[in-house]
Length: 488
Image (cartoon, rainbow, N blue to C red; front, side, top):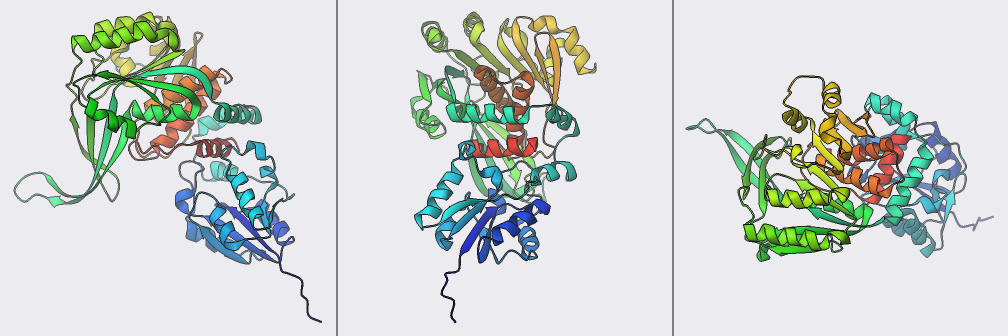
């Protein structure tokens, strides 16, 4: 007798980087619900679980999945979600693990979109009951992508509470008015192919391949602030013809407070080996531009009149246009809402020191900037901080970053050292700005402890340091997945 019963199809979607017993039980239960089980595997470029992930490339992940008897077919998903493959297969069931059951925690709303897509074709979403195991925990411990010291700190946290607070920040955002001050900068990466030493000169000849323009200076932290805050403004003295460029690199929600100026945009041009991304050379433009007396007057008047409209003022002090005593006096008068990041670079190294500000909410600098200020090159940093706390006694929080090592956070007289999270690092450009921006947002949000705030700041800065230049790609789903991953 012929069996006319319709055969059912189910889809499972994921990265499947480190296959373990939890996966096998998951596949087994999923297969028991359908006649044909299809596994959709995320391509390498859309894996967003932190630096060094995926551990295994797509081909190797598919090879392992092919050996599992419960799986009937494997397809690649070269998209951020499973939507395209659901649309193609039109499965009866879209099958997820029980840890995805609470759709309220779906910050990126991708699962909700996938659920709607499968229901569009008469299918439904199904959650399995098999025992959970964490691939991320295995990867963190076995493959050792996290710094050892940070693991000890993470173990002491109330992880569920931490994640809930972070989800709340991403969902509700901060309803405070924030003014950002500092130069917008264009970071230009020119990819070249070295062709060898010149025959006549002692220089390396290169072939130009292509150019990429990314947002630097204040344009970079503005992108991150948009993820956390509802009301952000940028005070910017600029030529009228450059306003369009600024707008192209900022979210439409950012309110631009334009001061007409004759200054050009600062451009930092890096030449990078296209093959291994090694930086070869950098040239900078328009670093010597200054503000006229009239332009400083306009900026000062703006701050005097509008300061009460803002809850917080974040000043990214790159040591270019704003090296003016009158401007600093105005900032010192709004110290109760002032957050400052001091930046040294090749142009101002040794001149842009933190003692030009007398008090404020938060002040941040890196180790070399702090050592220049206290005139000590060799003493152990923690001892040096203890000996010089008096300099910053009128700031609520002092941050001294140490790049890949971590950061000292001084709060209420206590010196906390929080190590960085990730070991891999490609490029530290802009990471200090990302760290301070995240720290400021978390502090303003008021629900995180100093340790939690520092961890989130390291997380964002670490993700940024694992991309070349200022190719900003942080969004709510990436941040949530990475935080989930390191807390496993």
